[in-house]
Length: 412
Ligand code: GLU
Image (cartoon, helix red, strand yellow):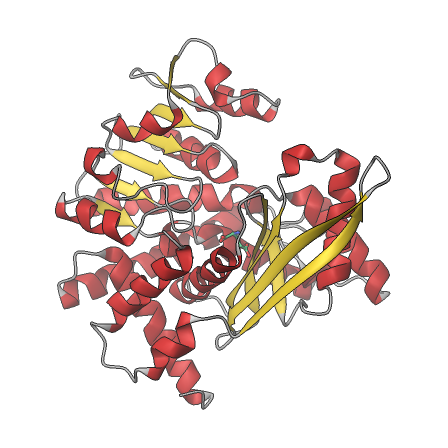
Protein backbone atom coordinates (compact mmCIF):
# COMPACT_ATOMS: atom_id res chain seq x y z
CA UNK A 1 0.00 0.00 0.00
CA UNK A 2 1.17 3.52 -0.74
CA UNK A 3 2.44 4.80 2.66
CA UNK A 4 0.97 8.25 2.10
CA UNK A 5 -2.48 6.69 1.63
CA UNK A 6 -1.82 4.70 4.77
CA UNK A 7 -1.04 7.73 6.93
CA UNK A 8 -4.04 9.59 5.50
CA UNK A 9 -6.30 6.68 6.46
CA UNK A 10 -4.85 6.79 9.97
CA UNK A 11 -5.41 10.56 10.25
CA UNK A 12 -9.00 10.21 9.03
CA UNK A 13 -9.72 7.40 11.42
CA UNK A 14 -8.57 9.55 14.37
CA UNK A 15 -10.40 12.64 13.14
CA UNK A 16 -13.65 10.62 12.93
CA UNK A 17 -13.59 10.43 16.71
CA UNK A 18 -12.77 14.12 17.17
CA UNK A 19 -14.78 17.25 16.80
CA UNK A 20 -12.35 19.40 14.81
CA UNK A 21 -12.52 21.75 11.86
CA UNK A 22 -12.22 19.68 8.62
CA UNK A 23 -9.35 21.94 7.54
CA UNK A 24 -7.19 20.10 10.10
CA UNK A 25 -7.24 17.11 7.76
CA UNK A 26 -6.04 19.25 4.85
CA UNK A 27 -3.27 20.71 6.99
CA UNK A 28 -2.05 17.25 8.01
CA UNK A 29 -2.65 15.21 4.84
CA UNK A 30 0.30 16.67 2.93
CA UNK A 31 3.67 18.15 3.91
CA UNK A 32 4.02 21.89 4.26
CA UNK A 33 7.23 21.82 2.22
CA UNK A 34 8.76 19.16 0.02
CA UNK A 35 12.14 19.29 -1.70
CA UNK A 36 13.31 17.16 -4.58
CA UNK A 37 17.00 17.49 -5.51
CA UNK A 38 19.19 15.71 -8.01
CA UNK A 39 22.89 15.89 -7.27
CA UNK A 40 26.06 14.57 -8.88
CA UNK A 41 28.53 12.22 -7.23
CA UNK A 42 31.85 11.15 -8.71
CA UNK A 43 32.11 7.35 -8.65
CA UNK A 44 35.35 5.39 -8.17
CA UNK A 45 35.60 4.65 -11.91
CA UNK A 46 35.67 8.39 -12.66
CA UNK A 47 32.11 8.55 -14.00
CA UNK A 48 29.56 10.95 -12.57
CA UNK A 49 26.29 9.51 -11.33
CA UNK A 50 23.23 11.63 -10.58
CA UNK A 51 21.35 10.70 -7.41
CA UNK A 52 17.87 11.78 -6.43
CA UNK A 53 17.00 12.82 -2.90
CA UNK A 54 13.89 14.09 -1.16
CA UNK A 55 13.34 16.01 2.05
CA UNK A 56 9.84 16.46 3.39
CA UNK A 57 8.97 18.99 6.09
CA UNK A 58 5.52 17.92 7.10
CA UNK A 59 4.45 20.28 9.84
CA UNK A 60 6.44 22.67 12.02
CA UNK A 61 3.67 23.92 14.33
CA UNK A 62 5.32 22.40 17.42
CA UNK A 63 8.89 23.30 16.48
CA UNK A 64 11.61 22.70 13.89
CA UNK A 65 11.16 19.67 11.64
CA UNK A 66 12.93 16.58 12.89
CA UNK A 67 13.51 13.20 11.38
CA UNK A 68 15.85 10.74 9.79
CA UNK A 69 17.34 10.34 6.37
CA UNK A 70 17.33 6.96 4.64
CA UNK A 71 19.38 5.53 1.81
CA UNK A 72 17.36 2.88 0.02
CA UNK A 73 16.78 1.80 -3.55
CA UNK A 74 12.98 1.82 -3.12
CA UNK A 75 12.66 5.35 -1.68
CA UNK A 76 9.75 7.26 -3.25
CA UNK A 77 8.40 10.78 -2.82
CA UNK A 78 5.18 9.50 -1.23
CA UNK A 79 7.09 7.29 1.17
CA UNK A 80 9.20 10.23 2.38
CA UNK A 81 6.09 12.39 2.74
CA UNK A 82 4.38 9.69 4.81
CA UNK A 83 7.44 9.13 6.97
CA UNK A 84 7.64 12.87 7.68
CA UNK A 85 3.98 12.86 8.74
CA UNK A 86 4.62 9.96 11.12
CA UNK A 87 7.49 12.02 12.58
CA UNK A 88 5.10 14.93 13.25
CA UNK A 89 2.76 12.65 15.18
CA UNK A 90 5.60 10.80 16.91
CA UNK A 91 7.18 13.99 18.24
CA UNK A 92 3.78 15.21 19.45
CA UNK A 93 3.09 11.87 21.16
CA UNK A 94 6.24 12.06 23.29
CA UNK A 95 5.94 15.80 23.82
CA UNK A 96 9.04 16.94 21.93
CA UNK A 97 9.25 20.56 20.71
CA UNK A 98 9.54 19.39 17.10
CA UNK A 99 7.56 19.00 13.93
CA UNK A 100 8.10 16.18 11.47
CA UNK A 101 10.69 15.83 8.74
CA UNK A 102 12.15 12.97 6.75
CA UNK A 103 14.55 12.49 3.88
CA UNK A 104 15.46 9.77 1.48
CA UNK A 105 17.98 9.15 -1.27
CA UNK A 106 17.28 6.55 -3.96
CA UNK A 107 20.37 4.38 -3.65
CA UNK A 108 21.29 0.88 -2.58
CA UNK A 109 24.30 1.67 -0.38
CA UNK A 110 25.48 -1.95 -0.63
CA UNK A 111 26.48 -1.17 -4.22
CA UNK A 112 28.78 1.71 -3.15
CA UNK A 113 32.37 1.61 -1.98
CA UNK A 114 33.25 3.35 1.30
CA UNK A 115 34.69 6.30 -0.66
CA UNK A 116 31.58 6.57 -2.83
CA UNK A 117 29.40 6.50 0.28
CA UNK A 118 31.42 9.35 1.76
CA UNK A 119 31.20 11.40 -1.45
CA UNK A 120 27.44 10.75 -1.63
CA UNK A 121 26.98 11.88 2.00
CA UNK A 122 29.00 15.06 1.43
CA UNK A 123 27.18 15.75 -1.85
CA UNK A 124 23.87 15.33 0.01
CA UNK A 125 24.90 18.07 2.43
CA UNK A 126 25.94 20.39 -0.42
CA UNK A 127 22.55 19.83 -2.09
CA UNK A 128 20.37 20.11 1.03
CA UNK A 129 22.23 22.50 3.36
CA UNK A 130 20.00 25.46 2.55
CA UNK A 131 16.80 23.70 3.59
CA UNK A 132 17.99 22.21 6.90
CA UNK A 133 19.20 23.95 10.07
CA UNK A 134 19.42 23.45 13.83
CA UNK A 135 16.24 25.51 14.31
CA UNK A 136 14.72 24.56 10.95
CA UNK A 137 15.04 20.88 10.14
CA UNK A 138 17.36 18.46 11.92
CA UNK A 139 18.18 15.18 10.12
CA UNK A 140 19.30 11.96 11.81
CA UNK A 141 20.02 8.36 10.83
CA UNK A 142 17.28 6.10 9.50
CA UNK A 143 17.33 2.97 7.31
CA UNK A 144 20.90 2.34 6.02
CA UNK A 145 22.37 5.56 7.43
CA UNK A 146 24.57 5.68 10.52
CA UNK A 147 26.96 7.68 12.72
CA UNK A 148 29.70 7.68 10.10
CA UNK A 149 27.38 9.17 7.50
CA UNK A 150 26.26 11.83 10.02
CA UNK A 151 29.95 12.62 10.67
CA UNK A 152 30.76 13.17 6.97
CA UNK A 153 27.66 15.30 6.57
CA UNK A 154 28.45 17.40 9.63
CA UNK A 155 32.01 17.88 8.45
CA UNK A 156 30.80 18.99 5.02
CA UNK A 157 28.41 21.47 6.66
CA UNK A 158 31.33 23.02 8.58
CA UNK A 159 33.03 23.74 5.27
CA UNK A 160 29.87 25.13 3.70
CA UNK A 161 28.84 27.35 6.63
CA UNK A 162 32.35 28.20 7.75
CA UNK A 163 31.42 27.21 11.32
CA UNK A 164 30.53 24.12 13.30
CA UNK A 165 26.82 23.82 14.05
CA UNK A 166 26.95 20.60 15.99
CA UNK A 167 23.17 20.52 16.65
CA UNK A 168 22.46 20.45 12.91
CA UNK A 169 22.27 16.65 12.88
CA UNK A 170 21.64 14.03 15.56
CA UNK A 171 22.71 10.42 15.84
CA UNK A 172 26.35 11.52 15.74
CA UNK A 173 29.20 9.55 17.31
CA UNK A 174 29.94 10.50 20.94
CA UNK A 175 33.30 11.99 19.95
CA UNK A 176 31.51 14.38 17.57
CA UNK A 177 28.83 15.60 19.98
CA UNK A 178 26.54 12.58 20.00
CA UNK A 179 24.58 11.56 23.07
CA UNK A 180 25.29 8.50 25.14
CA UNK A 181 22.42 6.08 24.74
CA UNK A 182 21.34 7.28 21.27
CA UNK A 183 22.42 4.06 19.54
CA UNK A 184 20.34 1.89 21.85
CA UNK A 185 17.49 4.37 22.24
CA UNK A 186 15.02 3.20 19.58
CA UNK A 187 15.29 -0.51 20.31
CA UNK A 188 15.28 -0.03 24.08
CA UNK A 189 12.25 2.23 23.76
CA UNK A 190 10.38 -0.56 21.95
CA UNK A 191 11.18 -2.85 24.89
CA UNK A 192 10.12 -0.21 27.47
CA UNK A 193 6.72 -0.08 25.77
CA UNK A 194 6.39 -3.87 25.58
CA UNK A 195 7.01 -3.99 29.34
CA UNK A 196 4.22 -1.45 29.98
CA UNK A 197 1.72 -3.30 27.80
CA UNK A 198 2.68 -6.65 29.33
CA UNK A 199 1.85 -5.18 32.74
CA UNK A 200 -1.55 -3.96 31.51
CA UNK A 201 -2.52 -7.24 29.84
CA UNK A 202 -0.94 -9.27 32.66
CA UNK A 203 1.55 -11.12 30.48
CA UNK A 204 4.58 -12.21 32.52
CA UNK A 205 7.69 -11.36 30.50
CA UNK A 206 9.76 -14.12 32.07
CA UNK A 207 10.06 -16.81 29.36
CA UNK A 208 7.59 -15.11 27.03
CA UNK A 209 8.46 -15.73 23.40
CA UNK A 210 9.55 -13.02 20.96
CA UNK A 211 9.90 -12.88 17.16
CA UNK A 212 12.00 -10.06 15.69
CA UNK A 213 11.58 -9.13 12.01
CA UNK A 214 14.63 -7.06 11.03
CA UNK A 215 17.88 -7.21 12.98
CA UNK A 216 19.35 -3.76 12.35
CA UNK A 217 19.87 -1.13 15.01
CA UNK A 218 16.22 -1.18 16.18
CA UNK A 219 15.53 -4.92 16.13
CA UNK A 220 18.83 -5.93 17.72
CA UNK A 221 18.61 -3.52 20.67
CA UNK A 222 14.91 -4.29 21.22
CA UNK A 223 15.85 -7.98 21.37
CA UNK A 224 18.72 -7.30 23.77
CA UNK A 225 16.53 -5.37 26.22
CA UNK A 226 13.70 -7.90 26.00
CA UNK A 227 16.20 -10.62 26.93
CA UNK A 228 17.19 -8.50 29.96
CA UNK A 229 13.50 -8.62 30.93
CA UNK A 230 13.56 -12.42 30.78
CA UNK A 231 12.03 -12.92 27.31
CA UNK A 232 13.14 -15.65 24.94
CA UNK A 233 13.91 -14.65 21.34
CA UNK A 234 12.72 -17.59 19.24
CA UNK A 235 13.06 -16.20 15.69
CA UNK A 236 14.94 -13.40 13.94
CA UNK A 237 15.05 -12.27 10.32
CA UNK A 238 17.03 -9.85 8.17
CA UNK A 239 16.74 -8.88 4.48
CA UNK A 240 18.28 -12.17 3.38
CA UNK A 241 16.55 -14.80 5.50
CA UNK A 242 15.41 -15.91 8.92
CA UNK A 243 16.34 -18.28 11.73
CA UNK A 244 14.43 -19.88 14.57
CA UNK A 245 15.10 -21.85 17.69
CA UNK A 246 12.24 -22.60 20.09
CA UNK A 247 14.75 -22.90 22.93
CA UNK A 248 15.90 -19.31 22.38
CA UNK A 249 18.55 -17.56 20.26
CA UNK A 250 21.59 -15.98 21.90
CA UNK A 251 21.02 -12.42 20.65
CA UNK A 252 24.27 -11.03 22.04
CA UNK A 253 26.21 -13.53 19.97
CA UNK A 254 23.94 -12.99 16.98
CA UNK A 255 24.46 -9.23 17.22
CA UNK A 256 28.25 -9.65 17.20
CA UNK A 257 27.96 -12.12 14.33
CA UNK A 258 25.87 -9.68 12.25
CA UNK A 259 28.08 -6.70 13.14
CA UNK A 260 31.03 -8.67 11.81
CA UNK A 261 29.33 -8.56 8.39
CA UNK A 262 27.46 -11.88 8.44
CA UNK A 263 23.89 -12.66 7.48
CA UNK A 264 21.43 -13.71 10.19
CA UNK A 265 20.71 -16.93 8.27
CA UNK A 266 24.37 -18.03 8.50
CA UNK A 267 24.25 -18.05 12.33
CA UNK A 268 25.21 -21.54 13.56
CA UNK A 269 23.10 -24.05 15.52
CA UNK A 270 19.66 -22.76 14.54
CA UNK A 271 17.03 -23.73 11.98
CA UNK A 272 17.02 -21.60 8.85
CA UNK A 273 13.61 -20.62 7.51
CA UNK A 274 12.27 -18.55 4.66
CA UNK A 275 12.47 -14.79 5.43
CA UNK A 276 8.76 -14.10 5.19
CA UNK A 277 7.63 -17.17 7.09
CA UNK A 278 8.83 -15.40 10.24
CA UNK A 279 5.24 -14.17 10.61
CA UNK A 280 3.95 -17.77 10.76
CA UNK A 281 5.69 -18.36 14.05
CA UNK A 282 3.39 -18.28 17.04
CA UNK A 283 4.80 -16.09 19.83
CA UNK A 284 3.81 -13.74 22.63
CA UNK A 285 5.50 -10.62 21.26
CA UNK A 286 6.14 -9.76 17.63
CA UNK A 287 8.49 -6.87 16.78
CA UNK A 288 8.37 -5.75 13.13
CA UNK A 289 11.57 -3.72 12.81
CA UNK A 290 12.14 -3.54 9.05
CA UNK A 291 10.19 -1.47 6.51
CA UNK A 292 6.65 -0.29 5.77
CA UNK A 293 3.92 -2.71 4.69
CA UNK A 294 5.52 -5.80 6.24
CA UNK A 295 2.27 -6.83 7.92
CA UNK A 296 -0.52 -6.63 5.40
CA UNK A 297 -3.83 -8.28 4.51
CA UNK A 298 -1.93 -11.22 3.01
CA UNK A 299 -0.12 -12.30 6.17
CA UNK A 300 -2.17 -10.74 9.01
CA UNK A 301 -4.39 -13.81 9.20
CA UNK A 302 -1.54 -16.15 10.09
CA UNK A 303 -0.08 -13.95 12.83
CA UNK A 304 -0.60 -15.38 16.30
CA UNK A 305 0.72 -13.29 19.17
CA UNK A 306 -0.43 -11.12 22.08
CA UNK A 307 1.54 -7.92 21.46
CA UNK A 308 2.89 -6.30 18.30
CA UNK A 309 5.46 -3.59 19.02
CA UNK A 310 6.18 -1.58 15.89
CA UNK A 311 9.90 -0.89 15.79
CA UNK A 312 9.68 0.13 12.11
CA UNK A 313 7.71 3.06 10.76
CA UNK A 314 4.45 2.05 9.11
CA UNK A 315 4.94 -1.74 9.24
CA UNK A 316 1.21 -2.52 9.47
CA UNK A 317 -1.33 -1.57 6.79
CA UNK A 318 -4.79 -0.33 7.89
CA UNK A 319 -6.41 -3.53 6.56
CA UNK A 320 -4.01 -5.68 8.55
CA UNK A 321 -4.68 -3.47 11.58
CA UNK A 322 -8.37 -4.40 11.46
CA UNK A 323 -7.65 -8.13 11.18
CA UNK A 324 -5.18 -8.05 14.07
CA UNK A 325 -7.39 -5.96 16.33
CA UNK A 326 -10.25 -8.41 15.75
CA UNK A 327 -7.96 -11.17 16.96
CA UNK A 328 -7.44 -9.21 20.17
CA UNK A 329 -3.76 -8.43 19.54
CA UNK A 330 -2.47 -5.34 21.34
CA UNK A 331 -0.61 -3.21 18.78
CA UNK A 332 1.82 -0.62 20.15
CA UNK A 333 1.86 1.83 17.24
CA UNK A 334 5.09 3.01 15.63
CA UNK A 335 4.53 6.63 16.63
CA UNK A 336 4.84 5.52 20.25
CA UNK A 337 6.80 2.24 20.12
CA UNK A 338 9.77 3.60 18.17
CA UNK A 339 9.69 7.15 19.55
CA UNK A 340 12.70 6.46 21.79
CA UNK A 341 15.11 7.26 18.96
CA UNK A 342 13.87 10.75 18.30
CA UNK A 343 13.46 11.32 22.04
CA UNK A 344 17.17 10.76 22.58
CA UNK A 345 17.88 12.76 19.41
CA UNK A 346 16.10 15.60 21.17
CA UNK A 347 18.33 15.05 24.23
CA UNK A 348 21.37 15.09 21.93
CA UNK A 349 20.23 18.35 20.32
CA UNK A 350 19.59 20.00 23.71
CA UNK A 351 22.93 18.78 25.09
CA UNK A 352 24.65 20.24 21.99
CA UNK A 353 22.90 23.58 22.38
CA UNK A 354 23.73 23.69 26.11
CA UNK A 355 27.24 22.34 25.70
CA UNK A 356 26.64 20.19 28.76
CA UNK A 357 26.48 16.39 28.59
CA UNK A 358 24.58 13.73 30.57
CA UNK A 359 25.51 10.22 31.63
CA UNK A 360 24.12 7.22 29.75
CA UNK A 361 22.10 6.23 32.81
CA UNK A 362 20.53 9.69 32.95
CA UNK A 363 19.72 9.66 29.21
CA UNK A 364 18.09 6.23 29.23
CA UNK A 365 16.14 6.99 32.40
CA UNK A 366 14.83 10.24 30.93
CA UNK A 367 13.90 8.39 27.73
CA UNK A 368 12.00 5.73 29.64
CA UNK A 369 10.20 8.33 31.77
CA UNK A 370 9.13 10.31 28.73
CA UNK A 371 7.85 7.25 26.90
CA UNK A 372 6.01 5.91 29.94
CA UNK A 373 4.34 9.29 30.46
CA UNK A 374 3.17 9.28 26.82
CA UNK A 375 2.01 5.67 27.13
CA UNK A 376 -0.03 6.39 30.28
CA UNK A 377 -1.69 9.43 28.72
CA UNK A 378 -2.66 7.52 25.58
CA UNK A 379 -3.80 4.51 27.60
CA UNK A 380 -5.99 6.78 29.69
CA UNK A 381 -7.53 8.19 26.51
CA UNK A 382 -8.21 4.63 25.30
CA UNK A 383 -10.03 3.82 28.53
CA UNK A 384 -11.91 7.12 28.63
CA UNK A 385 -13.11 6.88 25.01
CA UNK A 386 -13.44 3.07 25.10
CA UNK A 387 -11.06 2.69 22.13
CA UNK A 388 -9.28 -0.64 21.80
CA UNK A 389 -7.06 0.62 19.00
CA UNK A 390 -3.96 2.26 20.47
CA UNK A 391 -2.91 3.65 17.09
CA UNK A 392 -6.14 5.57 16.81
CA UNK A 393 -5.78 6.89 20.36
CA UNK A 394 -2.14 7.92 19.76
CA UNK A 395 -3.14 9.81 16.60
CA UNK A 396 -5.99 11.51 18.50
CA UNK A 397 -3.61 12.48 21.30
CA UNK A 398 -1.08 13.91 18.83
CA UNK A 399 -3.62 15.67 16.60
CA UNK A 400 -5.24 17.31 19.64
CA UNK A 401 -1.88 18.86 20.59
CA UNK A 402 -0.90 19.88 17.05
CA UNK A 403 -4.29 21.34 16.17
CA UNK A 404 -4.31 23.47 19.34
CA UNK A 405 -0.97 25.01 18.35
CA UNK A 406 -1.99 25.42 14.71
CA UNK A 407 -5.05 27.33 15.96
CA UNK A 408 -2.87 29.56 18.18
CA UNK A 409 -0.66 30.25 15.19
CA UNK A 410 -3.70 31.20 13.12
CA UNK A 411 -3.39 28.37 10.61
CA UNK A 412 -6.95 27.22 11.20
N1 GLU B 1 14.78 7.80 12.04
C1 GLU B 1 14.29 7.74 13.37
C2 GLU B 1 12.78 7.70 13.38
O1 GLU B 1 12.15 7.32 12.43
C3 GLU B 1 14.89 8.80 14.27
C4 GLU B 1 14.66 10.20 13.86
C5 GLU B 1 15.48 11.19 14.67
O2 GLU B 1 16.19 10.81 15.57
O3 GLU B 1 15.35 12.38 14.35
O4 GLU B 1 12.17 7.96 14.38
